[in-house]
Each structure stands twice: as structure tokens, then as C-alpha cells.
Image (cartoon, helix red, strand yellow):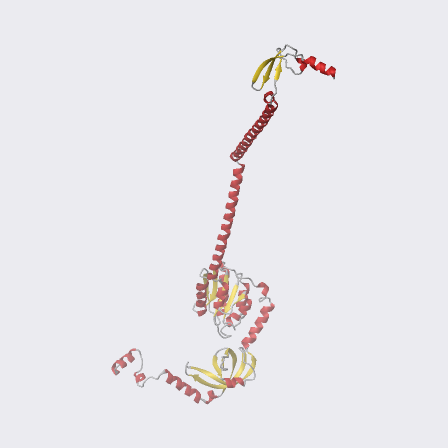
Length: 429
């Protein structure tokens, strides 16, 4: 850009043309210049700062990273491993300490911080003391009793969320719900989650959702932060509002290591907002598998019952057929036909047996009858008056006798007196 054009734009935006008299500095150059100024300042090269420890981090390197704060401000601190190893006691969040070191600039991030060389403890910090005091007070009132904790509904329809609408925590909650249980309806009660106005807003948000009467669960949430950043959730008004809610409340404030009084008052405490969303809702994929299993079991049971009912129906049909008049008539008809066949057979057999007996008697009669006797050489002798001649006394000399033999008959005359002969034989005897 030529000088005339640059001067024209400078005048347009109200800049003095002298701003363009030198070449601009880079960000690195400016940061390095500030660092040099700080390190050249004797006051900043050896300072003692009193404050409360928060956001303490102990990575595997052995260095300590933390924030030193008071009620109005804070400064980031670094304590290298060699100095940290010489510390008289293990540092904890909430400790009130006096740190000695130098102030310089961390050029990569462009922030100033205190490089701590030594520290001494002053005792528990004011916020920690207040935290413990409130905890003891509210615990004595029974607000944290496990007996008053209520179970969460298995399948919530409406979830009320108390959080900042612009915070990452709310987006994390929505992402979990979309993935895990998209059936739930979310009602957001927007509120500040940090600062002096936050406690009153959080209380109003909880009360609005509770009075709505549509929510099955209320989730109070915000992302992680230092003790003072989470302090709104240690406010006595917030704790009492959570305890007074008629709807079960889940607290999902901060990270896993963060604890607030809201956690103790809530019905369920979750380590993070995302974990809270998972605790509140079932997994829709698991529900699908469970429903499929129940459906298969139901189909199997219905099939078995249908088969049993079909078998019973068939048995009843058979029984009905057996008990029906037509079936009984058919059985009686069959029985009569069977009896008739048996009677006929018995009669035929009886007649055959009688015939055989008659044949036997006839044969016997023939064997003992006159014809058979005649055939054996015997004869039947009759007188003229048809009287049988059974003895010699029945015939007289001169009688004409009719003699019947097997193949006919003939006549004979008696020439002697058979009776006299017999009598003479008797006399001689």
C-alpha cells in the first residue's frame, strides 16, 4: 500500500499517521519484551504472595501447577519438580499458603505466572472453612441424609436441566441424550452458573421446573472449575432448593474430583454432566435388545399356548364326536351288527353241530336198524296176520310165513311143529 493511501485510511479511521512510522512488532517480540521488563523488575524477581490454592495438578513429570487466588483475583503458579520435592508438606486444593518466587511470562501462551521456589502453609483457606462450616450445619439439619434420597424413574419422559445454555456442559448433556435415549424431552431452565447472581438464578430455575409439574427428573449441571468458580453450588440457598424439590434431583457439577454441597443434597450425584445424563437415562440400544428378547419369548410362549389350545380343542372335538347322538347311534349300530353277526355265526355253528349229531345218530341208527341187521344175514319173519315170529312158539305147522331179507322177501310154510320139538327136547332133558 502506498503512503498516500495509507495516510488516507489512517485519517478515515481516526488514527494518527505517526502509527505507521515504524514497522509493527510480532506477537513473539511483544511477549519477549514484556518478559524482559518483568524479569528486569527487582520487585517481581523475588516476591511473596499469600493466597488460596485451587486447580492443583500433579502430572507424571513431578512438577506442580496450581492457581493462587484471593477474593478478587488469581495468578497461575508453577513449581518445578526439584523445588516441589523439598516442600515440607503435600499441597492440597483449599490450602492457604505464602508462595515465594519470581513473576515472569510463559511465552507460548502469553500469560504471566509465578514460578514458585518455596512455600509455607497458612492453614485452610477461607472458602474451605466456609465449605466445611456449611456442610456441618446442613448435615445436622438432615439435608444430606441417605434416607431422604429418592430413586430415579427408569424411563423418564421429561428432563429438566438447570445450567447455562451457552456452556459446554449443556451441549455434552444433549449429545449424550441424543445418542443414548432420544425419547426424552428436555426442558432447559437457563441460569448463570458462576458469579454473585448465580445462586439466586439457580434457585429460581429449580423452583420453576419443580412447579411445572411435567418433569420426571431435574439435572443441575455445569462443567469443571476451581472452588470459587463452583461456589454457587455451595450456596446455602441452592442446597435448600435442591432438598426442597418434589422432583428427584441429580447433581452433575464439575469433574470427578470436584465435590459441592449440591452433590450431598441431590438424590444422585454424578461425577460429570455427561455422566449425569447417562445415569438418568437408559441405553436405547439395550432397551431394543431387551424388547427383542421379550418379543421372542412372547412369541414362543404364545406359540406354545396356541399349540396346547389346539391340542385341547382337538381332544374336545374327539370327545364331542364320541358323545354326540350320531356317534352313539353309530356305535350301537355297529354293536348290533356285531351281535347280529355273532348270533348268525352261532346259529350256523349250532345248526352245523346239530346236523353233525343227526348224521351221527342216523349212521348209528342205520348201523343198528333192520336193514343193517338184514344185511348181516338176518331175516324178519311174519305170520299171515303180520305178527312177528320172535320165537318158535309163535309158528305152527302149516303156517305160511312171510320172510323179509336184505334184498326182498319170500313166503315159507312151516312143516314141523316147532313148539313140539322144543317141548320134546325139554322132556328128554
